[in-house]
Length: 49
Length: 419
Image 1 (cartoon, chains in turn purple, orange):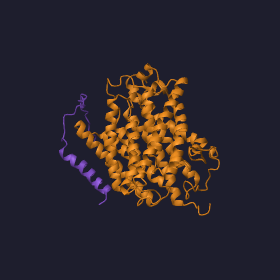
Image 2 (image 1 turned 30 degrees about the vertical axis):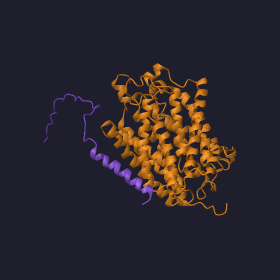
Image 3 (image 1 turned 90 degrees about the vertical axis):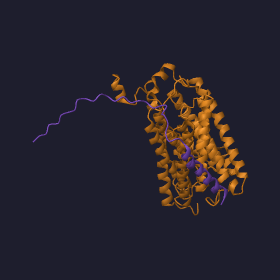
């Protein structure tokens, strides 16, 4: 196996392997709470014959 | 002229590639436009669009002649091809023997267009439009055209030394990335830099821009084969591979460093991978592309950390992605190049030819030095006549309104009662 292939395999293993140990999730430091606007009165839809 | 017959397939591929590369410039505008604040988005996109127009004219008038015209002292092309004189439909044996000379010319035009557009990310949100216009024209003429001749022009001194640059690692990315750093230093930081974080105003636009850049890059690299065949196919495959690997690597590094996988980081990583594979795309195999992409994701990410630490306001990290990514790619070409891919080139270090690394380092060094000196002189000369920066109140207002009198988003203005 030539050195380039060995390096490519190592690189891929490092990247893919890192995903196993990286955190699942964390508190989002930049997350912003979205204020939902108040719901308006539901529109009445009248059925027509 | 014997043996030079126009090949329809090659011509179709190169013309289609020219169109792909053309798309990269507005794509770059969207990539950059999403990264700036809302008040500067039109100005930022407009920089790329304007340069597309400006350099299209500069190139046919004299730019192509300076870059690719008959060699003068191994430094610059002559003026024999000014106004496309002698640049017709007969193939040119020095550059592309199977396509019309004008097809090669227009393909190269799109490279000349996008290169100064790349620099605009460094001085985004603060450069006066008039100064930007003059800078772009002078920079294309005195920095881009000479470097293009050194590396790609028949008789250019780096070309003669055997420097390998398939699609523009030195000519496009080092020149623009290093010049971006100089421009950021000369113009100074934006108001409020370091006090409040300047968040991208539209991350979706950034991803869209990066995706379109990726798409156009197939023309950039695979088109540089100048023929529709095995070499173009190889360049296409390694381009995609390096972009993907760099995106994965950048995302992973950011995940480890900031505890969250950054989607904007993945987009920036893809661009870094595309930059790094550019000089190597016609010389390395797919395993080499993986290593180059991996390296690009790491070194470009680290370059951004360094840039932040020394408080340089290269607004959209052109130096880190293009300057450092291009430098890594040019050196990596000297490591991983193999004649198994391109029999007309040379082997790199890992295929038994350590000398190629030295040649690549020389090309990198020359590109850095010329870009630093040329950009610094051009900016200082322009500043004698036209202030480089907008006034403070104009910067606060935003360049869309202060420079162009046009808001990017009419809805926003309308809601604010201003329209």
